[in-house]
Image (tube, rainbow, N blue to C red; front, top):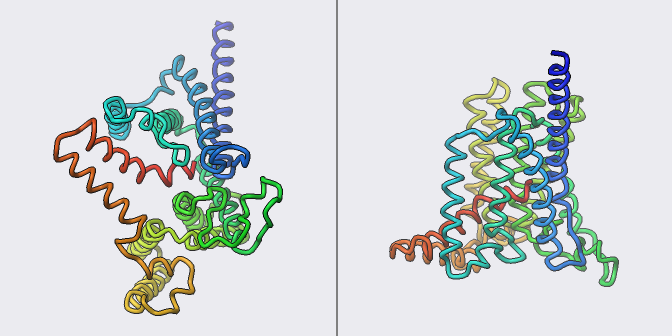
Length: 360
C-alpha cells in the first residue's frame, strides 16, 4: 500500500511539473512570437516568427502528448469545434495533395508561411491547450498577451518619430530609415501588426472591465492598474490607426459598436449612461465623417485618410475580390479539391488565422 501511495504521489508531482513546464512554454510563445525578429535571415520579421512559433508549439505538443498517453483526463474531448477543425484539416490536406502545386500548399511562401504545415501546428496547439484548459491560468495568459501588444504598439508608434540612418546595427532595422506612411512595428507588415493588435485591444477592454466592475485586477492593484490598462488600450488603438489597415479598422469600429450596445442593455446604471453617451458620440462622428469624407481635413489624419479614400478599385481590395470570384467560379465547376475548395480554404484560412497567429 505504501509503495502504491508513493507512486501515486510521485505521479501527481511529475504531472504537475510537466503541466507547469507546458504553461511556461505557452507564456513564452505569447510573448516571444510577436516580438522576435532576426535581421540576418530571409524575411527577418515574418519567417523568424514562424520558426519560433513552430518550435515552441512542437515542444508544447510533445509534452502534452506524454501526459495524454498515460492520463486519460488530458486527452482531447470530442466537441463540435474539435470535430469541425478535424474536418477542415482533412479537406485542406486533400486540397493540397490534389492541388496544382503541392509544395506551395504545404509550405506557402516565406512571407505568409500559412501552408498546411503551419495549419497543423495551429491544430496541434489547439488540441494541447484545449485539453489542458482547466490547468492554464487564462488571466495571466491574456494579461501577458495584452502587455506584449502594448510593447509592439510602442515600437510601432516610435517609427513615426525616431529615424536611424542607414548603416546602423541591423537589429535596429525595426526602426525604418525614414518615416513610414504606415507603421508595421515588429511585424514590418502593417496589416499583420494591426490584425494582431485588434485581438489584444479587446483583451485590454476585457481586463479593464473586470478591473472596474469586479474589482479584480490581474496585477493586484486598483487605480494604477486601471489607468495603465486604459493607457495601454489607447496605445494599441493608436497603433491600429497608424497602420491604416482598412479591414482591421472596420472590425475595430464594428466591435466597439456592438460592445457599447451590449453595455447599454446589460451594464449597471452608471455604465449604461456612459456607454449610451459614447455610443451616440460614435454614431454622430461616423455620420459626420460619412457626409464630409471628401473634405481635405480628413486627409491629414492617419487611418481616416485611407478610409476617406476607400475604393473597391484599390489594389489590395480588388485583388481579394478577384480571388473570391475565382474561388466561386471554380467551385461552380465542381473542382472541389483541385481548384475551388482549395482557393476557398486558402481565403478562409487567410481571414481566420491572420490575426490569431500573430496574437499567439
